[in-house]
Length: 308
Length: 295
Image 1 (tube, one colour):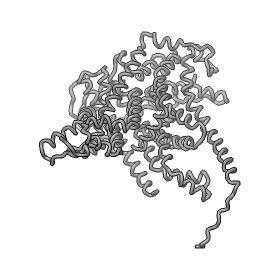
Image 2 (cartoon, helix red, strand yellow):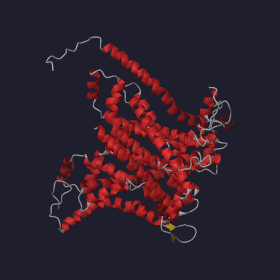
Image 3 (cartoon, rainbow over the protein chains, first blue to last red):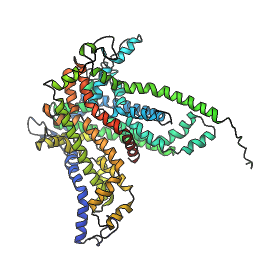
Image 4 (cartoon, chains in turn blue, red):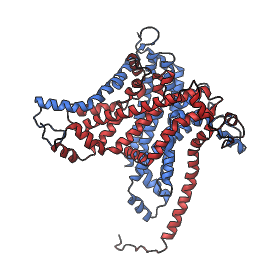
């Protein structure tokens, strides 16, 4: 029996039979997780790399090894580059928009004013909607012919704007819609960060005669910098995976103006059943995301060190 | 430097201008927040308003912000049309999201407790190598996991949708942080009382990390309820669709001439989550804020 005080420490000396039984019992806590993780995440990661080396069409012939052929095709695939350019554009626009907009809103609802709980609850509410609901509602509001936005524009005497059917506007509008849908989460993260700044800093600065803008510039923003960085990185990564918004609101159009990498992956894998090439697309996207993550970490990481 | 500090004049009139300044500042704040609240809140209103608007009013100019002849006909059609199985889709979504939430919490909290408190050879090496998996975007696993599910014969099944998502590294990482922040004394006392490992985990540790679990429930449940890509490719039969996928079908079929019906579907799909959110908003926002700090 175990009489030790912490669940960690077996009583017997390591290496005895009893000891291994104790360790095994401990291991059983993590075993279900490790099993599922291995089957559904770890093995698929490696299998994906393996598959990307084959001409692999599930409904047609048996897989044929082609080495780096899929990657060579990818480099010459204008659809890949187009979807990648659209995705990068969307991800940067949305991440930057969310990082700034959520910060502005968080600064607002952090003040001790009446009704701020109402504002917080309302501003987080869009986050709980599904992408399908969000796409249906905002797609209709942005509709050129019957949308509310154009109705208001025309009411003020301006011409209607083809928000989602103009190649130039479609990605910025998808980005605005996405910010409406998702900014509540970074807002909460900023709020947590703002509440961590000691009130005494502000008091000291106010005694020195600092005004609100100076407090923001010299206390709030510098102390919030690591959190701003965290938000920017996580937002960028998550918005690289955009799929639902264009799938529902624009089907990638007009033309291919809002065609994204994951839509291309969906099309390649589940419309044309080209699983090998699809794997290459997925890995290509993963490498791009990794590249931007490291770049951002380096860029902001150095900046954050300087600031401290 | 001079030894005498300049005396701070004690001014009796200080509080009043400050109070005035504060109220002027909060007026500015309302001028920013109130229009924002209208913009953020309007789409919710619009969904509900259009869902009770008859078709002949939706496609009409000028727009009306409230229907002249409100009707529940869209909702009636939603439940009676043969090509829509919205009741069944709702049940599918409830079953899938609930089971994914329960399984994920169980599997991840067990593992998190193991990695935080229970020793076995190689434990920390395994844990830190898991963190590398966080760097790999989930999209890489889509195709192989799909082929695996197909091989198991799990297409069009609940387990095919649920099981691949259960073992998330982020969940383990997060809950481990919560377990590590608990004082060890409580668990040590329980060991002295002769409680087993499983009992300590279930009866002592788990109840103490309640706020972490609440945040996890919200993330996992909403993530599962709102997931589009995975159920879209795993569930093909009409009666197996989830609400989220079903809505894209609804929108595709009726988006052109029956927007009221589509909005009724959207409202039906979001009212349960919105009510849940409204009831537990305080706890939800607190848990997420706290969790945001830990991560």
